[in-house]
Length: 399
Image (cartoon, rainbow, N blue to C red; front, side):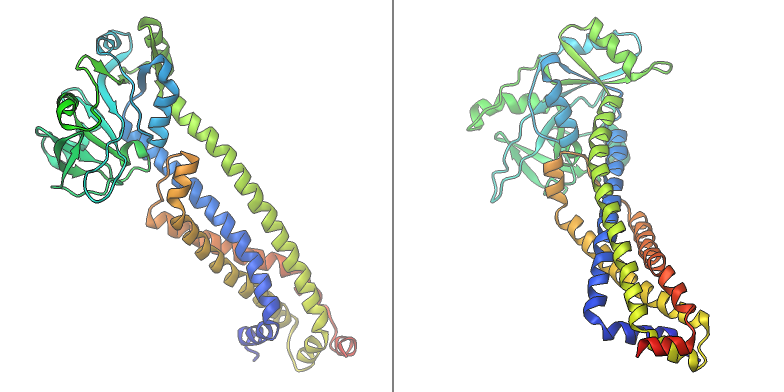
């Protein structure tokens, strides 16, 4: 009995350059689609985890600083803006507001060691906070002490490190798990009272002091009551509290999704074009292969090979080529995504968190199946044509 796979491998090796070109065409199509899928999942993953961690239904900021606030949340770009602390009490009095907590944003400071890292300093009030406090309760089992901080996963420190900000030394009490949102991953969270003391002492200790009076805050995070929508409460806050902009969480999410939709539409469009080109190239190549090997096919039939054996031979060659190309494309796509992850985050300014190992493996399996189907579909008609050849006629035409 003919060993279909070994014959197919010998045939592919005889035309190594053609086999390589066909594999590369599949690799490009599969790699692009694989990368686009992982890219999409990474942004969705970060959006889901990041917005869950934020915990706020509405973010209230000074009216003129709405763009900076959105950029800070989505891209984690450090920023500073302030408004009267009295805004907090006014927001709490608005109908539909269940809980409200203030935060203070301070522009980045540099570590005074042998390297410099930009971080986003965020002051929060443990008594009323519902973003950082739940993490403290789960992981530290205690609150923050004086001049202790919690850092995001991308800040290069470990628990117990001492780090200076504006001349004041802080101790790292813990490090958060990654979220994919730079607002959390590149931030340092400290008690509001410590932030004010740091600002006051910076006038004596820091080369560039920070000026933040204790009657100033940057934002108010709001959780709404049951029966209300974030959009409705946001409108009421803007109506009742002059000079502020209330940003509903859905608005932030929709902003990201709109940006994602445009980017992914382009990537998947290119992937579809590349796949169609690979399909046509493979189909044309195997028509040529069948025509070139009419004598070989005739001899195999004359020696007792059945029509199904010829069909399996051509299909096996195509699937082998497409599988090799698919694996190469997946490998290249994964390497590029991992290598240029930070560059993508920097230029796109979107949340990004790689999916779990299980989800990653699932996408790999689907991509390999996709590449195998590509080989099968492209060689189906040429394989059927090969099975219709009569042995004598095939040998005569192949001479």
